[in-house]
Length: 338
Ligand code: DAH
Image (cartoon, rainbow, N blue to C red):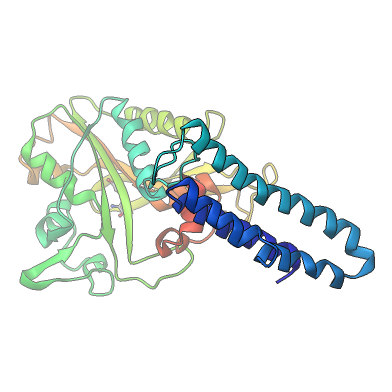
C-alpha cells in the first residue's frame, strides 16, 4: 500500500471510530490514540523520507492535505459536542449512508411500457396461466394435431398433460371465450420454449399479445394500431414492412419489419444482417376457426391479432446485442437501466 493509500484508509477508519464515539471524552481519547506522537498518523508520515526524491514534493503536499483533513475530522466532531448538536450515539449533522434503491428489471420495464402504450389506445390488460393446457396453447388456436410446434422439441411438458405455454396467444383464446365483442385486450407474460440458449434465443422469455374483435375490423385497423405503437416506441419516421408469413391462428398472417436505424442510412448493421430491416412482431387477421371455437360468430365479427417479443424490443431499443445479458442478472448490467 502506498503512503497515500495508507492515509486514506486511516482516514476511513478514523471517520468510522469518530461516528461510534459517544462522548467528548471518548473522542479526545481517540484523538490521542490516532494523532499522538506514537500514533499511526505520525508513523505513516515518517514514510515520507522513503519516497523517491522526484515524487517527494507532490506526495508530501497530498499527505499534508490528508493529515489536515484527519485533524479537521476531530476538530469538527469536537465542536459539535461544544455547540450541543452532537448527542450521545447519534450525530444528526453527519451525512447519511447512501442506500441503493431497487428498480424494475429492464424486461419488466419494457413489458409495462408496451402495455401502457396499448392501454393508451383503449386496450384492456389480461393475464393467463404460465402452465397451460394443450387445448388453449394449441387446439383452440387452430393448430392441426400434427403441427411441428407441438413437437417435444419446442414445448416443455409438465405432469398431468399440461405444458409451459410457448406463447401468450393462449390468453387470446381464453379471453375470446370469456368476453363478448367488441373486445380489445393486451396480454403480457412469460413464455417458454425448449430451445438452445444463444445470443438471440432463450428457454424463458416474454411476449405481449394483443387483439381486437368487433364488427368490420380490418387490416387497416391493425396497421393503424401497429403504426401508432412503433411511432411511440421507435419514433414516427421509420418505415414498416408487412411481410407474408404463417401462423395457424391468423389468416392472412404477417411479420412486421421496421427499418434498421442502427447502421449507416439504408445499409443496416450486424443486427439486421445488413438487410436494413429488423423483424419486430407477428400479426394477422384472426382465423375464423379461432373465433368459432370460442363461440363467436365469424360471419358477423372479424378481428386482428399481434404478438410482440419483449426481449427483442428491449434489445433493439437499448442496443443490447446478446439476450443472455437480460437473464444473467449481473447488477452492473442491470443498473444501467434504472
Ligand atoms: N404466437 C406467435 C409466436 O409466438 C406470435 C404471434 C403471431 C401472435 C401472430 C399473434 C399473432 O397474436 O396474431 O411466435
